Image (cartoon, rainbow, N blue to C red; front, side, top):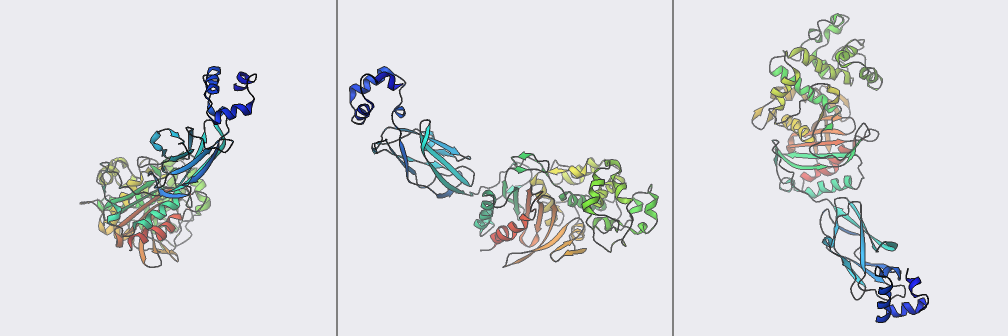
Amino acid sequence: MISSCIKNIFEWKFLMFCLKFNVCFVLVFLVGCNKDLELEEVSNYKITLISGNNQIGFQNTTLLEDIVVKVEDELGASASGIALNVELVSESGEVNNGASIITNEEGLVSISWKLGSNYNNILKVFSGSNQSSSVSVSAIAKYKYTIPESVNDGWNSSDVTALLPNANKLYDGIDEIRNENYKEIHSVLLSVNNNLVFEEYFAGTNSFGEFIDYDKNKPHELQSVNKSFRGAMIGIAIDKGFITSDQVPLKDFFPELSYLSQGGKENILLEHFLAMSSGLEWNEGTDLTGFYGTPFETAHTYVLSKALENTPGSTFEYNTGASFVLNRIMMNSIHVGFEVFAKDYYSDLVESSALPGTGEPLDFRNTPRDMLKLGQVYLNDGKWKDTQVISKAWIDESTKVKFNVSSNSSYGYQWWIRNFNTGVNTYNCFYAAGFGGQYIFVIKELGLVAVFTGGNFNSDMNIPYEIMENYILPAFVE
């Protein structure tokens, strides 16, 4: 320590006087006493922020104004040649391109700050390892758009600014997500006029409590968006002649279940299961427990053995079990392996490797890009590019209102229908919806497909409706 070297020679105040006026013989002596001496050991610097706080910039971009701080010694004199440290908080980017930050003759230093990817950015400036005197600087990094990456998966990427006249409105919505005003949104993707124009991913928690840093390569749980995939598979099976029509009685698919031929159940048709109107007793809030506890191979009988409480086709009753039965109907009808059917008649045609509805359908997952493809096929009357994947007749039938569920919610064949109202315009939309905030929105008028994934399993899974009305749809209007 310095004190042990000089205690018999000079008083501490005299040492400080010598340092202040650059008395050379004292410095030489000190160096001789301790070659590892650092100036911060004899001075407590005061660091003051002069300018540059609370700026607004763009993510991954250098702020227009440098951060300026001043360093003074404990006597209030400007401290030159002092190396400062900067601690970047919450992925706050980069400062001075990695170069040293040293004060000039006036004790000042300018710090150029390239912001990170987070919305809120903070850096802390201090001397050496002594953080007793430090300053914190905050900045906001607004969203900066980049064209989605082309990865040879069938999507053509395009610039959203060329298609949306008010794209800044969309960016404002993304900033609401980045600033956590909208929580647990895991992805937002848009296709406009057959082009992938927007794609952003965010970290979050899945229904199993696992925290995941989502990206375009990570499949996401679909929850009840699976229902819309199942509806598409049924439509393809009808198109290909494996199933005669949506008017086939349910009992014809399960001849081994004699109870489907009596007590009014003989009047249940395939269309009733597609439109959630089978008439079978079901309480979504309580029956799912028993349903999930039934082995996969016999789960369909848990649903079909329920008592008939309404005339088939007369009453809408949301029934996850009934949608599951559609998979069993497929398996009993196509006479080929489900995976072969899904690959040959859907996945290969839309340039996808995912096989919807195969295996354990309650746990089917898919990437948001592939979710977007299903919406694109439905938007284009059953086509993916120039390939007819599903007949236009089935698309029209599936997205036609079968039941009005609420004032702004209707149901077709495994697809929901509603209007979005921006206050200026009203748009008709059909969509797939899943627990936690999984959505595929299709608005033909705008040539738009929008996909959301999320983790709002214990909160508001309707956030995407608000984002659609307040930010995405207004982006289409100047």
